[in-house]
Image 1 (cartoon, one colour):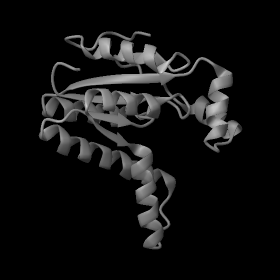
Image 2: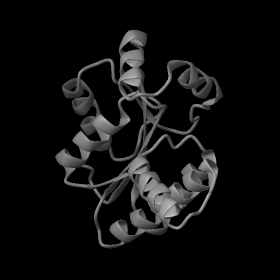
Image 3: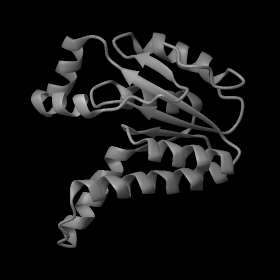
Length: 178
């Protein structure tokens, strides 16, 4: 368990196992789990009911803003929070860092990758996403250069959870590790 209040932000492309690992970590730490995908789905449903024709970028922006608002609410009552999102935008990560600082919470970035291309493709196609569209998204994705832990989800959840818990128990987040 992290020593103090924590904001844990998962970063990575679709299919890299962020959600599975973030959910497992939330269960283990008994932390609040917040998913960008869930919020985006709710925003799109609401927009459809209201007849709004907002673009995807607006939905994503609103989803990220809601993630931070909900994180603030939970951190302010002393509950650690795990954010499950691509978190590819450095501006979002900066706002998350500011939020954590303002509430005296430790912030941890965890980047998920999957080095097993066959497994990654299976995950992408199993989620009904198009592999070619994914390749375009992957080409545009900018990996964070901030301090973070990199987790290869081609390894078992058990192995990755051991690594994550060791990382989170360090007094301060360490440099990039894998």
